[in-house]
Image (tube, rainbow, N blue to C red; front, side, top):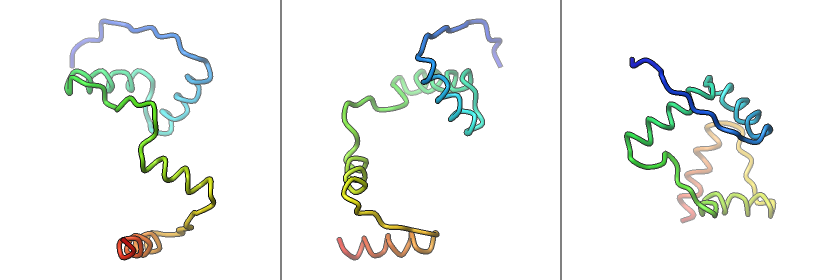
Length: 92
């Protein structure tokens, strides 16, 4: 493994940093690991590892609409989940 010889300093909003650190901790990662993973993905793919967009995906938008209109389906376990998938597939 190559020696680490460079530093990156970034200024971000304090709350954003705290929120990100909380989520990274839940994933078993730290900020340095996230940055290294991101930079490796950029150099490997020659692209961003995410799609920048100004609007949510159509699936996300549909889910948000379902929440706003109260059209939610409660699923308690995996069996219920697969039953709902089959029901939705039959409805299409």
